[in-house]
Length: 182
Image 1 (cartoon, rainbow, N blue to C red):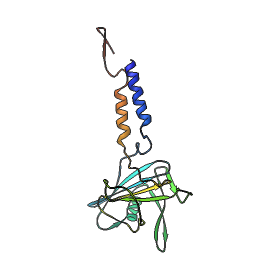
Image 2 (image 1 turned 180 degrees about the vertical axis):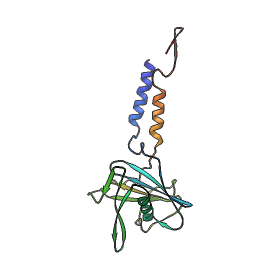
Image 3 (image 1 turned 90 degrees about the vertical axis):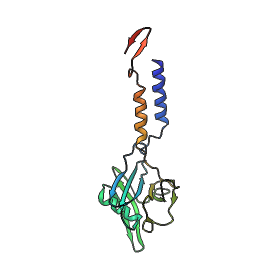
Image 4 (image 1 turned 30 degrees about the vertical axis):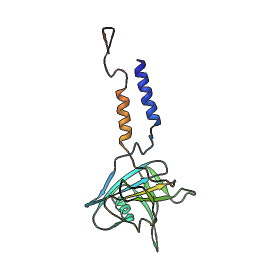
């Protein structure tokens, strides 16, 4: 019995120590568009909710066009301001999360890019309207902090939950002093 309590306690500590933010509890990537190329768009809300969209396309596409495609095919609302010089992302709303406009300090949408999953994130030196995306490239939008995007990992919590269930008392039969106990 004490062994089971210790195992359950260790699993509870692992769960407490693990990053169980919305990144760990996120939905799988949302597939959008059609075509031979796929670029990835991450949106990290200030609340901690993180979403990944895998956008398929053909031809030359700008980063801002990825947002247009996601907006057209999903419940995501991309709030984009139009100016004479181009378009600017002012906010996003999706799945009950919404960050729109400049809130002071770091509370604005930071734009990050990387050329592949193996590359480091870099703060974009051009806007999404000036960035041409290719097959396998990543665009990340982060609200409220100047740190690189968080890639959602939906399997983290499920793996820890399986470990916790396996450690539950009564999940196996034990033999004690020649008697069988359940």
